[in-house]
Length: 201
Image (tube, rainbow, N blue to C red; front, top):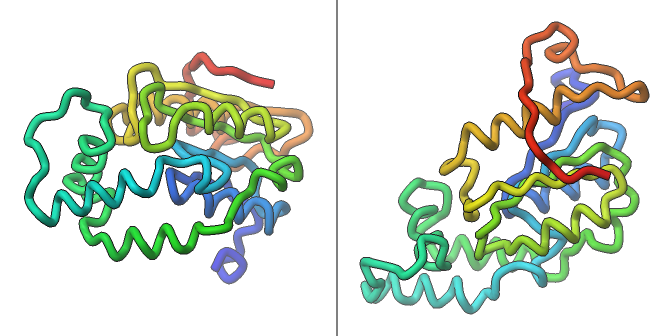
């Protein structure tokens, strides 16, 4: 599609399961990716939340046994209910099973050293679906990566903390380096980034 549109290079942003797609795209088509942004994701399903926790959520939902209150706003069930309620997750368990099947056996862990793109890794401090150590693994494995952790946020920080997420992304995309060609929007001054604390190589 990008070729048909005449687009040679793009900045790729992947969230959660989409982060796996973003990694795979960057690995398969490195010349087409200028920068990579990975949010609330990991290098493979073995590093994610246990599938049994998700299956338990769907089972309880089907039987109408979900409690109305949760001890933690970042508990697995609370996060899943939020995602379904906001339309970010499907309420159909079959769709989840298909996603899980698509990821079985997939991992980027042993290939991430091949990535040369500057990469921003975004993570919620209290993400119980994709725990924070996954972001640290990505940060240490990708050569030109930087990590930005959003304090107090869970898996859906792109919604619950949209302004902070956008600010971190904006600042990352606006960084200029001598070995990169600036994108038209950056060179035209359309972005005005603000500094966000992050962990960099």
